[in-house]
Each structure stands twice: as structure tokens, then as C-alpha cells.
Image 1 (cartoon, rainbow, N blue to C red):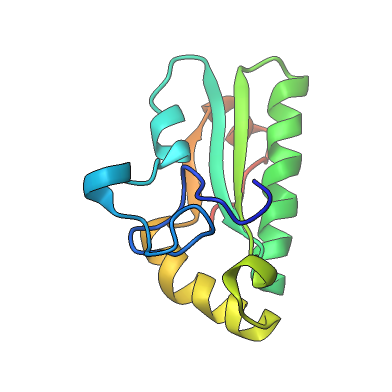
Image 2: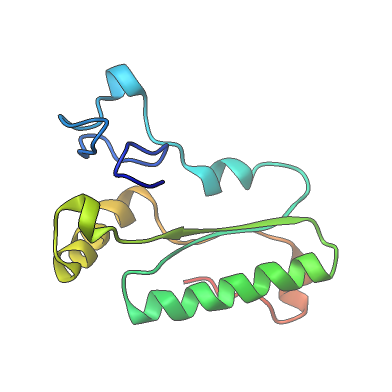
Length: 130
């Protein structure tokens, strides 16, 4: 998304240019938990969510992306790695405050981890969850 408009993952109450009073779940509905939803589908080999708000999260994201590519290379099914990222400009915060906000508000709603892992991936030494 660009321009600061509300996304499908915008949190309840979170303000954007297209929801200046905050996401109202009565009017716009609840955010979509993409990783949880797609992990229920047949054919999903690897579905994970990671956060890019700190160095540890970035390292975990790199591992998850490698795991997803390996599952694709092996033909195990489709993969998705959902990444939580800060947006200081549209959030109207500095970088440090954005990282803190993501940690305090987004991570409780969108927890990081592996939501579906084909057993063949683990056998090959693939995914490292949290």
C-alpha cells in the first residue's frame, strides 16, 4: 500500500489517510489475518509471519524466505511469508517510535511464527520458527 490509505491489515482504531478517525470495525470490518487464513488451505507447504522491526526479526525473516524458496524448489506446494514492517512517514512517527509501536500494537494482533510447515521441509532442516 502507498499513500497511507487503509490496508486490509490496518488495526482497529489505527488512523490512515482514508480512515482519519481510525479503523471502525462496524463500518470497515476487522483486519484480515492473511497467514492464519492461508495456512488452512490444501496445497500450502509453508506459511509464516515475521517482523522487520528489529535485527532478530530480520534474521528470522531471511530464514523464513529461504525456507519458502526451498519448499517451492522442492515442489511441495505454495508458500507465503508475511512481513510486518514499520512505516514512520505515514504513521507520523520517527523510526524508533515506529519500531516500538509495531512491537506493542501489531505483534499482539499479528503474532510472528510458522502457521503451516510441510513435514518434508523440517526433514530437510528448513524452518526455524520464533
